[in-house]
Image 1 (cartoon, rainbow, N blue to C red):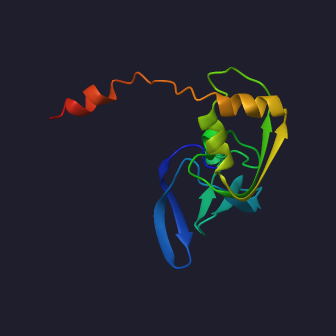
Image 2: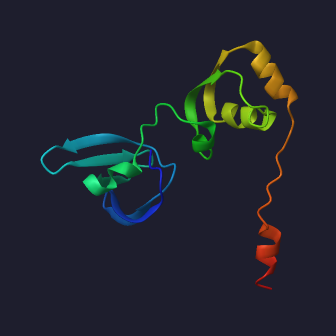
Image 3: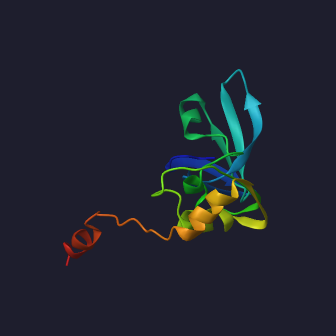
Length: 139
């Protein structure tokens, strides 16, 4: 999984070329060049990009990821391990986000009381970003 936006990384897909690989893009390593210390990654949409050693920190394994990192993605199946945690994180909204990442199958592994507590916790944390004020500043 790409973990940082890289607007300059070139890719190819068939005869098409372009630039930009973005946070959350998921793919497979299809080639390793040990001599050049480089990888070739094919993303789910068919784009293929070359990563030299300086770019390898932009990639993380994606077989296991947080709900936060999975936002915007869909998967055939999701296995969701649930253990207790801070109530401000263990919310209905987080559970909904996790479950809706799956196209066909969700398996929840954990304690039933944890799932029940998340369903019952409809707390939505307010964010104090001053976004309204910042957007209005340009008017």
